[in-house]
Image (cartoon, rainbow, N blue to C red; front, top):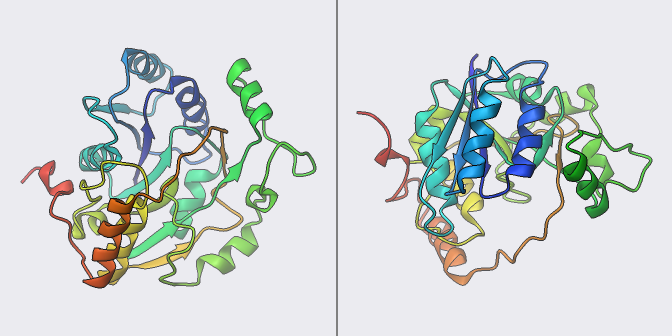
Length: 264
């Protein structure tokens, strides 16, 4: 099974560089990497171009003009460009364990959404990595990572979790998930009515559930470490209304989605 790795980014090339460093050193390489760029300045383009020359993995820079928060559009635009049948999505401020791609592919199945987790790096540890540009993996015995259980890779426990199907909406995270491209197209991708941060991932997954697609959790595998930054509130009333409308009406399709970018 071939896969495309989608990395979202916006004007943080220092973090993206570290994500790319871990993405190209996987035990099982992605067949391509697509940078879903929501309008970054030229320094991101220069970084992507330079990185493309250092690796045999094709890297595509999927850029759109900066017109405010349009994460849903940048994801749709990038996923539409994906050449391969399986899609893995991460954020451009994540350090990926060397078996990250391998773990996602191992759990993949048609009509199943794979949800991974993340370990949160502490501010000072993150700052040091960004300053030195050297990948350092925190020890579980140190205070450099908050939620330490999410930094444990235990394959036999992961296999148990991966066998369980559910439609649980708790802890939906767009920074670590995967599914078949045809399942994304089935619900018309991400809803571009979301123009501020918050609930866009939950609404996407709710439509997957409404369409009969189940969830599997990747626990104790597909590890990733989140470089610290402040996060805003995701309690936007308009976004909550969009999500509630999808729930109340059991919607499987959004009006403004990935179909705008697919070739007929």
